[in-house]
Length: 127
Image (tube, rainbow, N blue to C red; front, side, top):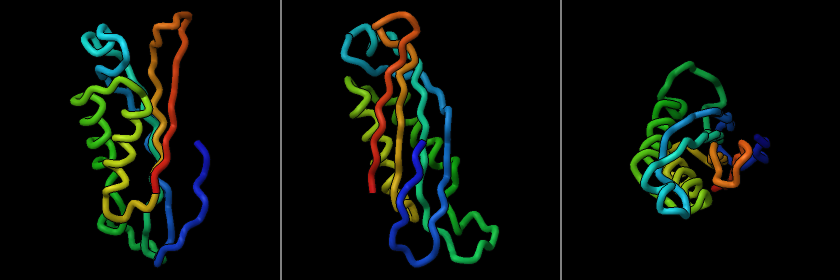
């Protein structure tokens, strides 16, 4: 995934990457996709404000378990027709976490009805 441009913050920015999160979800235009579900991969990077001096405390950053669980809940418990809407929901849920300054989410649909092992992906970014 691409890196983020620097932004104005009081401390420093670090990037947390969660790559290759794979979930089963019921997303797609076809009724059969929403009924039977499919496999989705989510890659997420969050720019997080951290203290200028690293104090090795979880309270100074964002717990990646929170990022993972919010992503999983959206993919597994909600249903969207488009990957754009799914990726946007994940990005907005992540951007709402305190200390997160921006987020980039890439959602890949692992088995697209186009055939021959084709995947399809969408990437969104939110400040």
